[in-house]
Structure formats: structure tokens, C-alpha cells
Length: 257
Picture 1: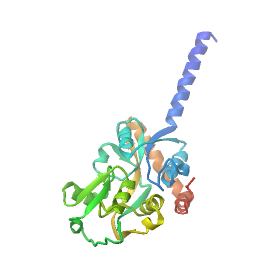
Picture 2: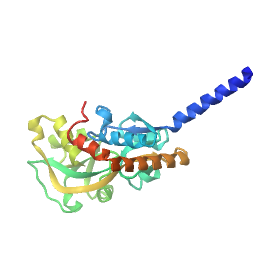
Picture 3: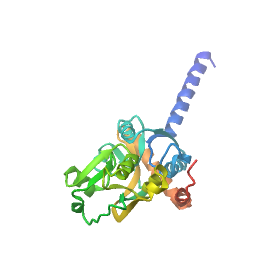
Picture 4: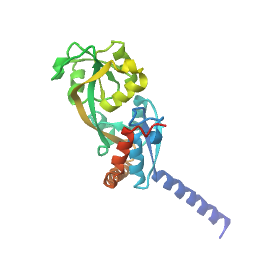
């Protein structure tokens, strides 16, 4: 073999190796939403763990990039990443992304101070209340439309922690949040005496599917393959019993470092 031929062969092998690595890796943006996702939890939280293992069952490695939610959304929507965790389907988001099968469902309720109880059957009953929300979150079509049409008064902030503190300071009256995440955040951010001042209304605001999303800006063939692979892996994970084990571990606090 000539030196020129060997050089060409070596170059081809390098290119093939690089393609293989790229084909077997998916890059997803992630954020802070404990206990589901967090850079400070083992396996980056239970949702991340499920996603990692589902892709692994299809021979795909996951690389996570942690960002504030707005930046993470944009990075994935622009195609700088293949996709993102953890999003509920909405018509607006479906312009940017393909949605996976639901990884989990969350139940959002209104948190409020025990000293300031309220009742509600419809969103019309919330008129006159200052409602805290978190930017880029959805709270269900009915709530989102009521906010958009100014039938209710919402005051968005950058993260859920701010809403907890605003509630305690009586700067808002109520705020919706996933129930398990809400109590986890309240107990981690507040002293026990302060946490005891907060409760939740029993009526759910919404129960929504939470998915991973794959960007419509990446090549369509790659997007289709990644989405199909994840859905297959998620089904396998559930069939094996590992999915329920991960959820149980999370509820037992076993993802804490």
C-alpha cells in the first residue's frame, strides 16, 4: 500500500468514527426543577435518569447542557441542541418542537398561606387575586387563555423560588405549582416554621403530560430517529419495571447527593 493510500484510509476511518460518535449521542438542554431535574441531584434527577436510561436502551448516550429555562428553550428551538427537557405540549411550542410520549404527568395546584384561604370552582372565581407564575411554564390551556385574555391577574417571575418567597411576603395571593415539586421546594427553601404557614388548595389546576422535545431545526431524518428511539426506550423501561423503581427512589429522596 502506498503512503498516499494509507493516509486516505486513515482519514476515512477518522471521519467514520466521528460520524458514529455523533450518531450515538443526543444533546439536550436541561434545567432546575427538583426532584425531576437538577444539576445538583444524582443522575440529574429522576426525569433525567429516565431519559438517559431510555436512550441508553437504544444505544444512544445523552449529553445535558444546564441553562435557565428561557435560554435552554431557545438553544434547543434554534437547533443548537437536539432537544430539551421537560416540556408540556402547547400549540406554540409545537411550532418549534416534536414531542415525545409523556415521560410523566404533573398535577398543579394553587399554593397559598393558611391564613389566607380561598375557594374556587372556575377561573372566574380567581378575579381580584394576585397570581404568581413562572415564565415559559404552561398551566393548562384554560389557565393560559384566561391569563392571555386578562381574565385573571398574573405576575410572572423567572423561577419558582421567587414565587415561594413572594407568597410568604404576601406580595402574591396564590401560585400554581406541581404538588410534589412545590412541597419539596418549600421545605428546602424555608425554615420549618415558615414552611408550616403554606398549604395548597385540593382542586387541581391541571394535570398535564411532561415530555422531552426534539428540535424542528435539526435535520428531519435525525429528529425522527431520535424521537422514535426515545419512545421505544421509554416503553422498554416501563415494561422492565425500572421506570416505577426510579419514581419510587425519587419519592424516597434517593436522588439527593
